[in-house]
Image (cartoon, rainbow, N blue to C red; front, side):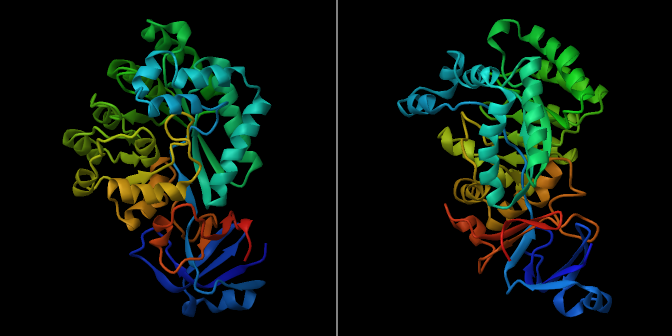
Length: 406
């Protein structure tokens, strides 16, 4: 494949706005970056062998964005529940009445694979238009083997049908299905003894997640799932400390989890445990905003102890019906008081760590796939500043332009 030079850029190769190459250049060949550095120091061999050069006119270039926590595959919506919450009914009340997650479970169980793919593809397309080149997609709206399988197969199909790297997470322990009411331990047995092994054997699972919460699953039940995942050699993640402090983050750390997510009620002992075991904190401002939460995640504690912070959409029908990762940057800054630099790292370098793919995603370097975004902004802070405006000129994935034009 011919060598292509992208020149005269303002490069932010690590996702850290404090590390910039200007003017910068990237040499791409066979879908990968073969050289990156100062435009004035391009090796002579590249200048003589290049087949094409493109002047980026001082546009900003960042790694492709990563949405590291989504529930993108589901059927239907929960607009009716949204209206009820606006009238004062809490999310927990709706869930205990059989709504919430189980409402989406009913719709998803009834949907065919074709219907699920069509609905989910529309949401994915919106994310790709903003520069997302890698995404995590969870199951968890089936809560029985066949629908969980169908969801994961749709997620895999999305990765084959669209220019995006899809990583699947099995979230069978998302909620208690109605047919197991009052029998949570029996349902966890089903998850551990049948669902997890079969879906793993079929190559549908990259990681395992649990909703550890007072309306979800206990620490003991979560640990049973973690033990099974460990036996199968699968990394784990956790929905932790969203509605209460159950000590889930400490359990996640004991099992060397990739991430602990939400964390509005996380305490310092949980932060210290995460730091010790290199667990990434994924903050989800969309859910915080949509639920009108008032308990802020402990950003300052996470900073003080050096826990990496990732940002994601949590795209889902009940608590974060958003398909804009750029909007999440804005919300992370305005709601959580993160800096624009922290927010950008949260959707590049730290997000790569959160999906267990830091060696392939979240940074630009020789040997890595050429996944990057070109932005028409004067300052990188604009990526978090604008609300409802997409400044992405074009997206490059695996060396090919997938969105926009040069």
